[in-house]
Amino acid sequence: MCLAIPAKVMSIDGIKANVDFGQGVLREVNVTLVDAKVGDYVLVHAGYAIQVMEEKEALETLSLWNEILASGQQE
Image (tube, rainbow, N blue to C red; front, side, top):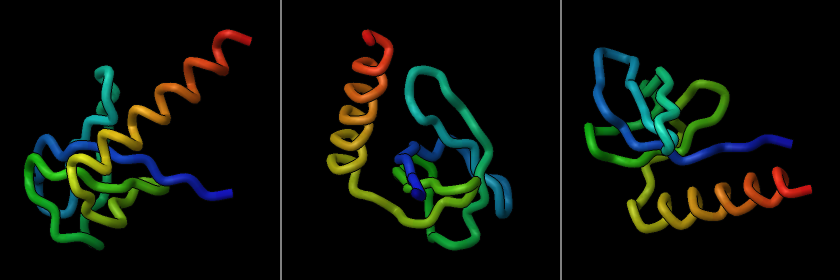
């Protein structure tokens, strides 16, 4: 199964961007496949931004991920 997670682009330097997955989780990803700008939300899979997302959709998806992760910690 493949998973992709939304992240907010914080900075871009050439083909790399620093993105924020929320709650202070920052990572560097490759942005050569998308036309992303600082402040955009991108869908990240295997270290690559594969799609630019609408902010509302990205925030809804992140909220669902947080619910899933929280429910797994309660078991």
